[in-house]
Image (cartoon, rainbow, N blue to C red):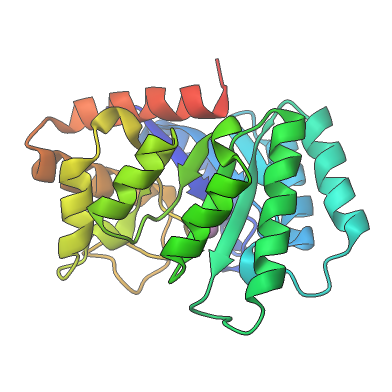
Length: 258
Ligand code: NI
């Protein structure tokens, strides 16, 4: 069986309320050796801290998603920084970034939260998990001026062109590939997969969202990672085992897991 690293999941989500324990328990025997559970609100960050205490193979990231910044206080960000600095199983700051698909009228506060959380990553010595949607130029611009290359990290669920991917590779970032890359019309995503060296790709589901074909529209879970790996293998013309082995090493290196 292939060894797989799930680099981005949301197992605290209510979509897993009915069978969370059984599903998580089934992951190791299906080759899922590591999971990074990613927070997006204060509440899901708290749940992430609980999950990583409960499951040995779970690691976590705390951060406020750009669509969730409303009502987040300075004290909340201070709590994130304190937890992240103190808990060795918190291996990144995220997910953070810019999302102009859902909100276009608060771009300045999105940027402000993004910069402040990049600073948390720098001070705690952790990489960042970047969420970016319909905000290609501004994301790169903020990361460049806030010196995100000091922290490193991943641009998750990468949805831009290979020319954009080149800019993040130049900054030392990894590219997260998930289920959307398997969609029939995902021409751009397949170009990105072909272009980005395997040594810079992370496997992810973003579950419960974004199930790969043929499970599109259903609840996603890490059990679907082999489908995403097979698609990468097919596009690159290499073996699935190589994809799983190399992306696992990539994630361990990026998240600093020995
Ligand atoms: Ni996510």
